Length: 246
Image (cartoon, rainbow, N blue to C red):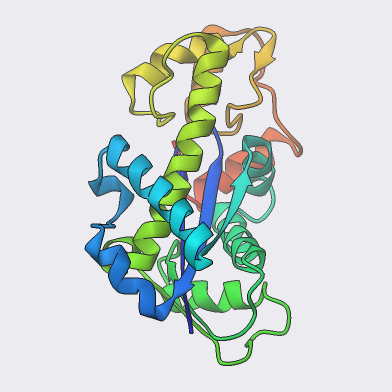
């Protein structure tokens, strides 16, 4: 039996991608994660997260552990917000990450629920998987699964590490720290002028985020640029779908 954990990093930032990671290891190897001190990425230092990622990669070579990453670009996020919303984007990305493991038998899948209704989240993801239910397989979603299931904690680490690399790449491009990419981060706020000006918004900015449109309105001329549909449709989705977006 394979134990599979799925989690995301980067739902709320104004900069950079949303990353979903799925990882799979034999059930008999779960004690190895616990022995190594694998826990929710938010409870680990950057140094320790990186060490655990490297350790996982080493075990992948030795023991056949698997991972699958789905990187949702800011463009994809903006377009999702203008259609069926961020929750559905995460459903699709979770499904894509599970499919990317290329295992379709004997899986016990645990998702960190991104929906207030965890059972609904499970059902929606299962609908993304061809011919589900797979042989000898099951799926469950739980709130705070990244805190309570070591395999989901490992997925949270892999997702966070990949997103951090994307953010570092952007920081290298602009030549200064851009912080975490979250609107509340002072370094992120201080970097917005390098990424948003009268010529437009950088592709790594989530154009539809309120933080980005407010910065544009306060510092640039005309209406802010919009990916895809009209700003009227986009604002309606902000008002009614994901209140946490800022």
